[in-house]
Length: 251
Image 1: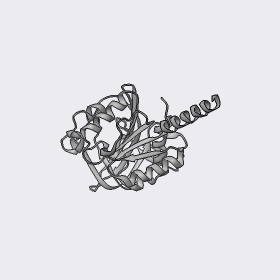
Image 2 (image 1 turned 45 degrees about the horizontal axis):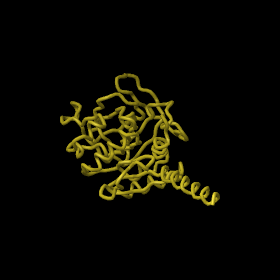
Image 3 (image 1 turned 90 degrees about the horizontal axis):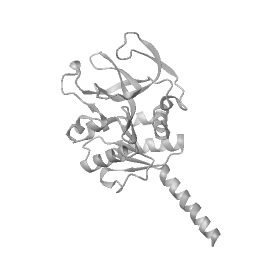
Image 4 (image 1 turned 120 degrees about the vertical axis):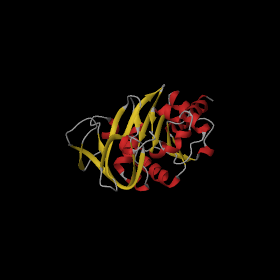
């Protein structure tokens, strides 16, 4: 009897730990997330379940982390679920168009993220997306776990940080045929991890320290990674390792 109880206890504990390791990906563009899920498993043995907004589980609590990859409208019920999950101790990762103009209509999303997408001309600081570009993504946090763990950069990018004048070679990667977002306005302090550099169709070179960041929220933690428009972005092992690092990162 005692051996049976012990075995049952072990099985329950093993089952609990397996559930606690799972990552939930909520997406409306599934193929890109299938590529990401495969990379997370290969790089850090993380298992991911992919669902749409309408198929989300009743509670997010059992999941080690939740990834949001929603291009179109963010429904109000998932919006509240994501916010409550993070504020109550969860780890929430928002990728690419999880911050986009479509989310302006949401009641609490931008205030939760502490960001704004200004409605004015891009030259005056207004938000704009720029597609079909080759974008360099540079490491701005040389000592941070997310940008360094199991990562070796093969090249450097000449980059000028916001508020500085001097161009400096920084380690980075290049993502081809992708999309960049200009002038995300960050309304509160956070840890800046990555910057981006690209040339638009007019020949103007843009460099902004807003390609990835993280910060505590309530009793939880939030990460944002701007790359992710193209499936090929998630075929880059350095970028997917950064996402995996964010998932296993302990503050």
